[in-house]
Image (cartoon, rainbow, N blue to C red):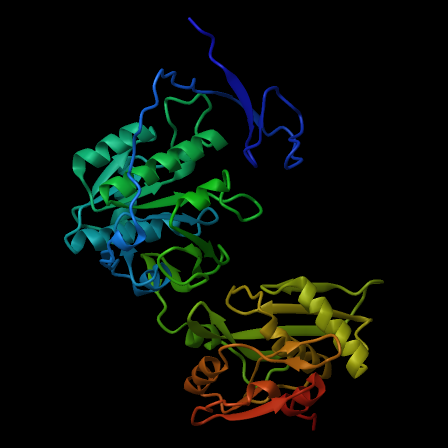
Length: 453
């Protein structure tokens, strides 16, 4: 009997080595190489043509792919108007953030609409799922399966022929054909590939729930995200109630779209008006607070950027940013010191986006700068919104989708907006809001910040 060939795979990046190494040469991580069994190539004396045949581009059918409404408008928005038949969706997030809760509720909603649904759990027993279902009020005729072997799961999928499958989670699944235990790079890659293949051939839509690493990325090889059609990430503080579902990849809709949910004792509840929710507890006439109209995917959302500037008691002043890029904050502090003469070198500066949202948009620079100056001067900002990218010379640069931002601001009751002057050309100003175009951050702050009495 021929000896099985083995190799060593890195659990972080998938690098393959013929011998064990303490440090991976590719990602430089330590003690990540695991031994795996390599499948022997099939010997053949003649070439055999298998698989699909090539077709001409004009012969490809243009019929619309069927979409299913999940019953949750926020999730449908993120997916691009619903679940596509035969699609594979990978959803990741921190433990306890609500992944299993949301998709059990979605499975229940689909089952009540007449769809055949199979919920596969490798983490919980059937009794545990039933107890959670009772807490969430799930009482539909969906089917449950507690299984971790991927080939057995696929056999049950073919036996029940469901329209919709939830797999919780991919890190608990394993293939008996591979040597390593569940959760290894080779196992995750193989299980994801088999589930994706089954979805494409059978037309069953599959949701795969995944764990994340301490860096926030889905655990396992990056190639899994390339296999699937859609990748979703849950964001939000575990101690808080609000959850943000963000699409970072979507072959059937807009990327970077978000859905907002409220996590309660009886499950996830949709938040149809995120701007109103995020600004609901905003303190009026408080210094260090500026509203920024962000664009998340196709949706405008008003966010409150808060700043706290106070004299430092340390040799080096502290700088902290929650929900904002630390580099952009440091840049704004430097611009305000150099171009406006503010003495911030002996001040602690803290920035925060209220509601647990995260911003990486340069268009938030002007609101960030306004909140810092407002807190430093202890002068509140007038009832206005601000948007614009701030350059190193203090100039305010143009931003995109300005009309959407202004319409949302007007709907939420704001009567003043400070925008880059270059955005005024051809701009249709919504009713009820006065727009001020500025070229320099100094001019914007004169309009935004109320003078001290």
